Image (cartoon, rainbow, N blue to C red; front, side, top):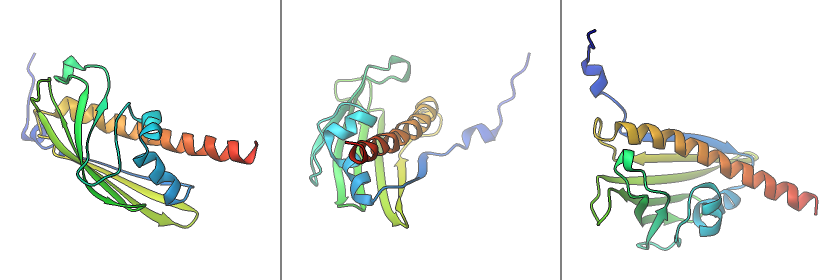
Length: 161
């Protein structure tokens, strides 16, 4: 049995990009990107505050198969209310050793009847982060869709008290 590896294997995206539409105003979508308790509902426990320069963490179970201790160290790099949020995203095996040093960019654009939400997560290194990139690419999409589920539940609850 022979396995052929080509140069194409070395060419992978180093940036996760997702673009979704929500039938909700930017202010409502923004709440799910900037309020710690709401972020926990769709992503993971955190101590986020929407303050420029604020350092915070997301926490999940350790992922030894990806060399991650389950703590994502972040810092707010840019914040423009209801329009843009950027934060660093570092992770690794623990003890302040980081094998991933990346940046998450959120951009919200008002659209008729709702909001267009763009996510860009950049800083992945090709082969070193191949498995992590694929897992996070799928994970981001799955989790972002949860925002819409929560927004729709909120809307239905308000309409049917």
